[in-house]
Length: 477
Image 1 (tube, rainbow, N blue to C red):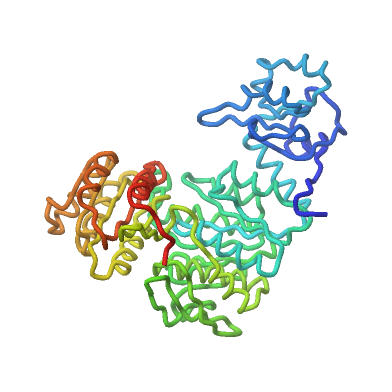
Image 2: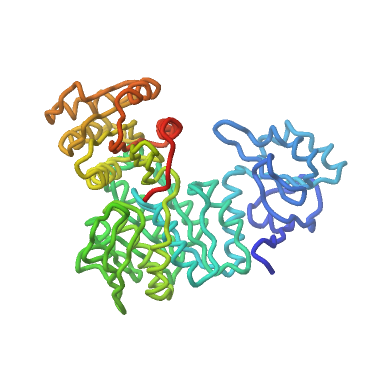
């Protein structure tokens, strides 16, 4: 069987997985897969009608039926508005559940149990997407591995990843995100991890999680849902995680820079093209040369190496996989324009810790060149938003930033923080993205280093793409 062969579903299995009620159709009818997207569904799939923030899948029921779909999963409270009797005459199969989003997770959990693959689940305040990509590369060096696509780390994305499992997969590496209490517990319940990785605990999503201890409690739920024989991989340099490591009743593999870490880095050196370090494993020491800049990359790589060690990947395979890594779009991509302007595209997301790491990387890479910071809001920080944005401004002012551009609701807070740290107000520009771009056209010159960063909702990639269009891009050195 190839990795693309679908695993059949019967109506009976769908009802068993979801606890749904059959409204019409055949209990033994078979379906090739599960889909929520009416745009790319195939006739042999079951269509799960998800109710999202923008679209309600139930409104697309007739569209997918015209495309040849024979099976649908709907919300019970939507049934009265749908032509069930007509579907019965058409010999379609339709089942109803209380909540189709939850049912999607139930289907994924059912499917995960019927596959032989083990699961590695990764969460953390910073670095989880990069760590997931690094870990998937390391594990895939020896095993057939499934990995999360893009940023599919929520109650819809995680199930869609797990539903791609097939009998050839030995491991699945998945990413788990959260912004509200209880989300990690549900996602961990769905994927039932064999290995749980927590990268760090930082000030992200404080609006709903409340405090760093609240963040810790939420992330800790991942470990509570480990399989009985499961293992934890934790950052020894994070004091909250180090304390957690001493409390949980599971085998723990610590990674980090200090001597308490079983898997650690020594002799770290930053270079214009990346960062190198000696990877210390219990069995061997190897030199790793990462092609991505930034000190923050080291713990991400160590987490991946720790997972590789626990599953039996050789030190040389770990080294090769780490060195083959390339960052995802918008995550610390270094772009060199044809007219000598250098862009650090870290526009995908932001929180206080990742902002600090990005500014430190800008300072290192730019050497004696002019540094320009273009920053959008860090979202979901709750009552601490104002003070945390002021801290970013102060850090920029003390990091040799030549000019700061700020946009968003908390632009004035960043500007205030920078001025309080004695940055000349003439070097701070607050305004819309369009106004920022207009000003940039007049001031950018060869040799400048530009860091662009903000939360996902700020779409800071608009600025990156505009600069790229003006200046032309050559591959990173």
